Length: 459
Image 1 (cartoon, rainbow, N blue to C red):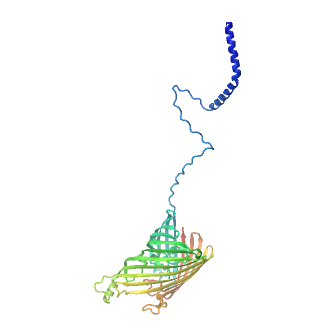
Image 2 (image 1 turned 120 degrees about the vertical axis):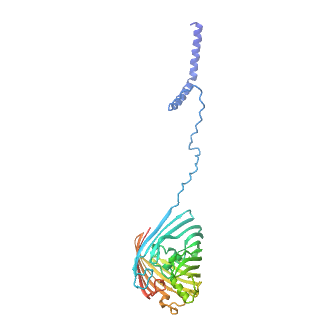
Image 3 (image 1 turned 180 degrees about the horizontal axis):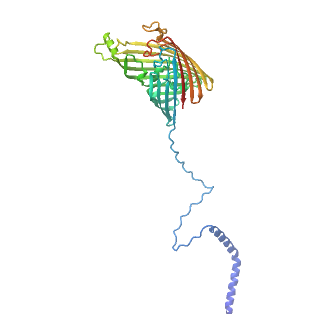
């Protein structure tokens, strides 16, 4: 190498050496950064360079940090839950015995028997918070009251718009006194037979329910307590076996209407209820007389020759009023009710069935005591007068005087085996026969006794 060349090479080395001393620190810093980046890239697979330029990748969404607001998602719609259907009912069987061969309370023509079967099955559900629907099937075999094939007792919708106003529609239980809405639930009461004067067993099918509409509500009265009230309008559904027909058959019943109202006041005395019920109805009974009675009517000149036996008996109107009071204190319950039943009746054959006006008086007083959690006892005294102006029957034109009244002293013992099974034993001492069917009691006796045993399972 020439001397000039060596001098140039030496000059370059000197320059580079000097420059290296100036850039050393910068190179070291760049190397450190490259090593750090390489360390992060080492955690990923190195991509293979494509032969052709690749499309630019879509940038990834930036990671959300705790310092940034989190998006709130809309909640999912709740699942649709079908309404819960409550199913309840009871099955009851019993036995009875009377001390008189002549007095037939149930129409069985026997002094003792097992014709005491009852069963019910009801369904109810809350469709919405304010709308409820329900229905009950009922069957029984109580002597002449034989409804073994289940029939609809009640079926209605109940809409509670406000605390002070609700509406019911359908076949609706009819308020009447303290206990008519519960008379078909054996476990809800102590007596086997409710006081016959106000709650006659032969009238259960007539007074239990009506078909139509009802309004109801509850109103607080401040320091004066509260008021419960109901009013209704509809028609009655009267089965044929609910009526006592002698000498003929019932073709049909035409209920014009039934209407009424009930008010109960709960004063600021714990356990006390005082109320009144008013009911009015108009009914036509279409009958066909038996041939023997037709012949007798024609021969007596009460009907023309060729009379076909058709007869319409109209009860327009029949009016019922009842005053009620109930007081519960601890294990004691005291109840009393007084009722008057007014009826104006006429017929299409006045010579056979003349126009009449009736004023019946019915009342009772009852006391019950829960002696133990599983033991309850009670008693009532009931009075039934066919004519309030002739309570002793002294002015009766025909028949025995004791047919004008019935005095019933009853006592009941109830034992609950468990929450769903109970037994009852009941005895009645009767004076008079105003509550007995004339069809099954041609020659009754004045004094008589009735004893009943019943067991009921509820679910």
